[in-house]
Length: 213
Image (cartoon, rainbow, N blue to C red; front, top):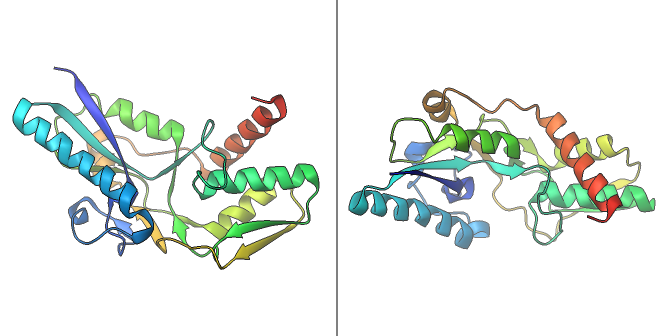
């Protein structure tokens, strides 16, 4: 029987946690800002568990940090903070706009996972011993939205101001992932340098939008 690798967003974890550990997967309610999506992703683990019990389905459930990279969503309403900020700052730089508006206070901290590392984790999960419970993929280190916005601004070379719109919600204040179990089971941990991954993502977006792709 073939194995199925089930990717689960880290927003399936309880909203009050700051460092997500597998043992705490059920220890509290989800954050209101991701209640529906997070519940669906949590339920996907229940589905895989049930198929394993009834039909012997061989499955591995990976909990992934916020993914980003080339071919991400780059729309203000649909994307994660990373994609929205790249889109806004690149376009503002092209049009020589004086400022860019960032949703919220900029204080929330998020851990990010480059898409190539996410793909590597899923490929490696195909060959590890069977394991029923969720497995985190991450490094336990995050960055604030404010610091990330400044990094993107610096990479792009944008000289305008960043204005924080406090009327917009922040979401959960702090989200990082304990990836120690994943590192043990997969024999690997994400290694892509965060700033270089952001730089590559910006370059991809810049090229695609200039080419009209």
